[in-house]
View 1 (cartoon, rainbow, N blue to C red):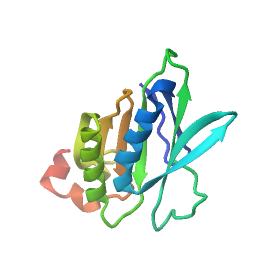
View 2: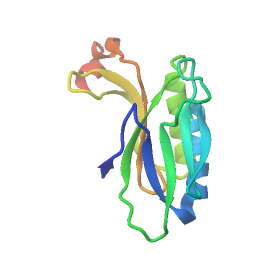
View 3: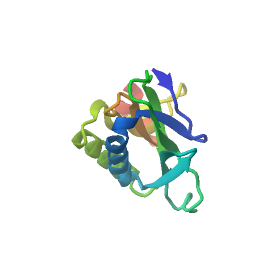
View 4: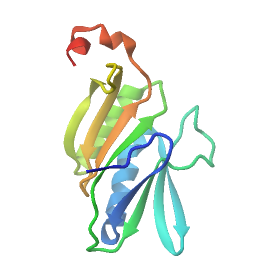
Length: 160
């Protein structure tokens, strides 16, 4: 699986042209709890759909999308990618990630990692995240951008 993750540069997800509307609906629905807004861009006659996070820290209308869906001709070989998107709204981040996960499963995604605290970095920093596999086989992970130092001190955190 290719890695398309970047918390600073946008991720481009190639989608068969015939699946574009279905994937648009999927991403619109599952990213709504995390306050991502949809952006439509037409470039060289090709419509791309983007999703930009909205929060207290990123609330300018010109903030670029973190994720773009771009159509490719049906039948073209597409390698699934891993997509990691941050959740910027820090007030209810666990709730938003839980709602993302529930919406994704209801929209036909496959379960990869249920929402919970995890050690993600080598120094065992803890983050809250959930990961699903979208209808086209891409792994989509929503991750809280905050470190949870207190979690490392719990029995569950030490064992993770």
